[in-house]
Every structure is written in structure tokens, then in C-alpha cells.
Amino acid sequence: MAEHEHVRVAVIGSGFGGLGAAVRLRREGITDFVVLERAGSVGGTWRDNSYPGCACDVPSHLYSFSFAPNPDWPRSFSGQEHIRAYLERVTDTFGLRPHLRFNAEVKRMTWDAERLRWDIETTAGDWSADVVVSATGPLSEPKLPDVPGLDTFPGKVFHSARWDHDYDLRGKRVAVIGTGASAIQIVPSVQKQVEKLTLFQRTPAWVLPRMDRPIGAAERAVHRALPFTTKLRRGMLWGIRELQVQAFTKHPGELGFVEQLAKRNMARAIKDPALRAKLTPDYRIGCKRILLSSTYYPALAQPNVDVVASGLTEVRGSTVVAADGSETEVDAIVFSTGFHVTDMPIAERVVGPEGKTLAEVWSGGMQALRGASAAGFPNWMTIIGPNTGLGNSSMILMIESQLNYMADYLRQLDVLGGRVALDARPSAVRAWNHRVQERMKRTVWNTGGCTSWYLDESGRNTTIWPGTTAEFRRATRRVDLAEYAVLRAPAERPGTGAENAEVAA
Image 1 (cartoon, rainbow, N blue to C red):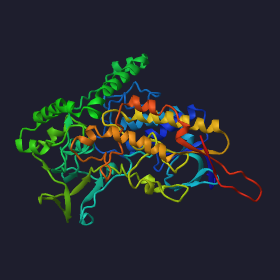
Image 2: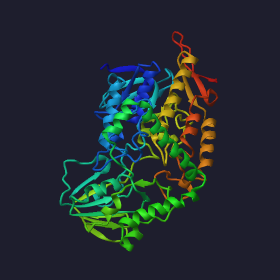
Image 3: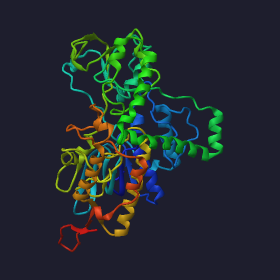
Image 4: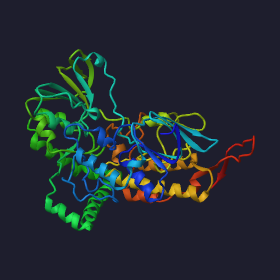
């Protein structure tokens, strides 16, 4: 590779967002782009999360690209290995391999106001790009709590997203820290192998049955022979979830019936009243993500499992100490403690024209115009940006909407012509964010009485979209140039230079 290469678009990350962006660029006739990936293969979170039992909690036919339907999903809720294989097939089907640059972790992206381009430093060399599309995803950087004494622990320690497959859990005493979406899959998957499993639970989760089943050969054959049946299935799954949105966003009281279903799901497996009391949440269902499992509660009821209704506060040698003072001897600690979501690490590596990082600009909370453009960072877009997350449906729907916005953004640059950049106006970002936060006030995520990873340090919900996916698609169908300042490259004269001119759209 040359020491420095310039491309029209640099895409950061090769998960669903990055690969989707690459496909859309090719479909728009743009081939002058690279996908910079820090690892050695595609897949994003579905490459990194390979813990036992890892699977998606959204039905497979909805958790896939509309432009790349898969008639051969083996289960209604497919596992990590099937989702990762799907992304590999998408990469090959759409000819993305020539654009991929593996082991190219982005160290720094700096805006060059003179040339109107991004200079990108990576572990595999340097690039520059007219436009950067950041698709690093919110579930990419594991979050480990600062536990006193952890460095003295003589056993094995790892995060669920960095699972050590060389370490054999059989016959071991294992502590699992956390009760989120990863933990409820890990616990039943390892419970039968270990001598003792201690689950540290700061906050219990609402858990509904997982209506998973194998998709038979005949059913898959029908989807292959009649593609419209796959599209119909996807549409039905989408429609059901769109109808549920009002309960989450406008009428949280309507979720009481769902709480009763969750309590009955628990009662079927947990007969011990004391354990049932530990596992019963004191907040409205939906405030945290509703979890799906038909094996979690049965695993917790087994004699080799102990639920500690407290967080981990200290490690003393091989002893783990809970906030309630209880102590347990363990051989391994598995952290299922989530990710850096409201403080995206990539933001620390993005440097704007005034020398400030995006992390500094977002120090009071993330916000971006239509979830994509941050003020003061021209020609930089994010996929799955602030307030684009979902509490009940498929993120692929949101990604595809943002890809529509990206495509129109690039078309607008072409129409404007020459060396040009778009910078989201602060007033437009504030107006958009104000509308989002006003709608957020009624939602179960803000009123349900819980503390979740949806909220930042100030208690503001900077992750979830407070509406339907159809509403978001309408909001991101096209770029409104009135929401952007148009930056023109300075006129180049021999021996002279001029400041960038800002042109009102």
C-alpha cells in the first residue's frame, strides 16, 4: 500500500453499519472508498461476541438487510455464528473485499480545513478522505467496572465480548457479573459445566419467553422458491413491532399486561419465593431492554447457582465481595457489564477544525442532526449515532434509513460541485435534539423508574429513538441543505491562500 492514499469516502468499521454503507456506496456508483477495520475479518459485534449461547433477540428475517434477504436462516432467532456467516456472504455477494483494509485501527481523524478533507491515521498506514462514515457501533468497546483488588485476582478474568475460548470452565467456580442481554445467554449455557455459578445482580431484568424454533428444510425451500414469502414474513415482523411502539413512547401504562406475562414466565421456573423476590424488578417493564430467554430462569433454579442481589464491590485474592457483604471463592470472573455507549471511544479520535475532539464537544451529552451529523465536524457522518437506538425492533431498519441519508448527502455534494463540504448548523442540531428530547419525556425509558445504559451521566437519554422506524425513515429520506453550512475550498492562487468561505445553503 502507498504511504498515503486519498479516497472519496472512508468507512470506519465492518459490522452491519459499515458493510451496509459499502453496499450502498457501490449501488450509488461510488467505488472510490475504503472500509477501515481494526480486526482481521468482518462482523463487528457479531465477530467480537462469541460467548456461549450468543444469539440475537430480534427475529432473523427482520435482523438482516432488506436488500440481502436470507431464505436459509436455520432458526427464527439465529445464533452468532449464523449472523456472522451472513455478513461474510454479504461481503462476497456485493464485491466488497477489494475495499476492505483489515488490521487498520483508526488512531486519529483530523479535519484539514484548507483541503476540505479528513486525514486519517491508522495502524496500517494513513489515508485521506473527502467524507468519513463512522460505523464503529455502540456495542464495540467493552465496559469494565473499576473494582478494587481485581488486579490481585489469581484466576481468570474476561469480558463477555472478549471470551477466552482456551479457558475451560468445566468444574470451575465462576462469577458472572451483570444481568443484561449477554448474561442471560451465558448463564444457562455454562451452568451445566461449572461446579458453582454465582450471579452478581445489581438490578433484575424483565424476561419474557424466547419463542425460538428451528426453521425446517421445507419452510426454507418455500422462501427460496418464492422470494415474496421472505419479504412478507419480514413485513409482518416489522408491522407487529411498529404497533408496539406507542406503549413504549406514549402510554407506558399499557405495558402492565406484559409485566404479568413476564411474572408468569418467572413463576413457572422459580418456585422458591425468596429467589423469586430477588429476581422481580421494581421498575416498569421496557425501561431497560426486555430480555428474551426460556432457559435463564430454569438455570437460576439449579442447586449449583447462587444469585447475589448486589453488585461486585471488591476482590480479595480469590474472594469476590458483594455490596451486601457476602463473600464467594471463585476461579474465574466473567464480566457481562455492557459497553461504552453514551461515551463512544471513537469520538476521542475525531478532531475538528478548531482542534477539539468530538468527545470534548459531546462532553455535555451526544447529539447529532438526524442521528448522523455533529456540528463542527464537516463531511463526517455516523451510522447508529445519537438517539437512533431501538428498544423493541431491529437496528437494521435504522441503519438502512441512515444509509438513505448518507446517499443523499453524497448526491448533494455532487450537485454543489467542486471541493465542498457540509457542516451541520448548531441551530439545526439543537432544534433536532430538542424535538427528540421533548418526545423522550413521555417514554418508558425516561419514566419507567430505572437506571439503564440508555442514559448518560447526566441522566439524559442520548441513545434511543422515541418513535417508530417509519418515522425515522421519513426524517432521514433526504438532506435538507438549510440545516447545513456549505463550506467551499479557498481559491488557490500562486503563493496565496484564502480562508474557507461559508456559504449559506
